Image (tube, rainbow, N blue to C red; front, side, top):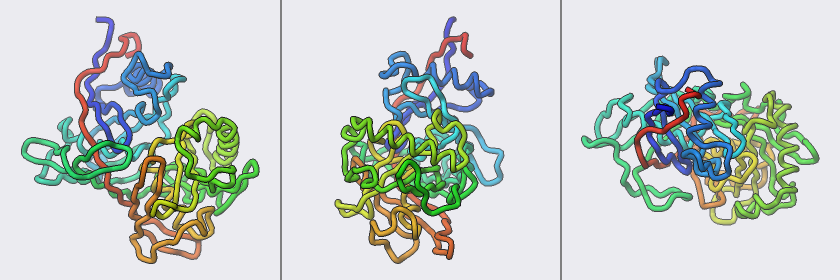
Length: 360
C-alpha cells in the first residue's frame, strides 16, 4: 500500500474547522509531523485540492490530543496552523475556536470518560501553557451536539461548550506587555503590543485611514493596507521578542473602533495575512484585555462596565462575541484572573486521512 492511513475526527470548533488527531497516531519529530500535516491538509494549493483543508486559514487548522501527565489537566492539546498555499506549519500559536472541539473530541476518542449531563474536561494548551476548563454537554448516548446556542459566523444552533481560560498572560513572550510599554509607534502607527492568550499588535482603525467597519472582502482587497500592516507587525513582533515574524502567524494583528451595533467596541482581526471572517477566541481575549487596560490604544473608545467580571462585547465582521473577563485594576494596568466564553462544536465526520507512505 502506497499510502498511510491516519485515524481522525473532522470537527467544527467555534468558527473554525479541521482534523482532530490522537497525538499517538502521528510522528513524534516536528519535521516529519509538519510534512504529514501539509499532505493531509493539502497545503500548497489555494483550494487545498489534494487534501482536506478548506482553502482558508480557519479551515486549515489541526488539533492533536493526548492524555496529560499534568496533575491538573486531563488532556494535552497541541495545535498546528497549516498555511493554505505555501506548505508551512506554525506550531507557535494556539487556537481557541479549535479548542472548543477538544473536549468533545477527547470524549469521542475515549481519552476522557463522561460524567453525566455535563462533563468537565481540563485542557492544557501546550503551545502556550494556557489552562482551559471546558464544559461539554453529554448523555448516555455520547456527546450532545444539538442545542439552542447560536454563535455569529455559524449557521443554526448547537449545544453550548463553556470555556474558562486561565494562565493566558505571557504564554508566548513571558509578559503582559512584551515591549514594556502601553503604547509604541512603528512605521508611523501607534500600537499596543499585548500577550493574552495570543500575542497581538493592536491599533486603532483610523490610524490606517480605515473606519473599522469594513467587510472582510473590502479589507482583503486593500493590499496597500496589508503591506503597511505587515511592516508594522514585523517591527512590533521583533520588539516583542518573537523570532522569524515574517514567516510566522504570530503576532496577530487587531484593529479597534468605536462600537456602532450595541457592543463595547468594534474589532477586526487578522490571521495575519488575511482578515478573519469572524473573530478568534484567543484574539477576542487579548482585544478585550486591551479595551480594559487604561492607557492602551483602546482608551476612550468604549464605555466600560464598572463590575468585574466584565462583559466585553466585540463587534466583528460577522456579528458579536462576548468575553467575560475576571480582572483587577492595578497601578500598572490590570491583573487578569480568567476569561470565559461560550462557543459550540460539532462532529462532522470520522475516518482515516491518507498521506503518502514515503512521508510517514
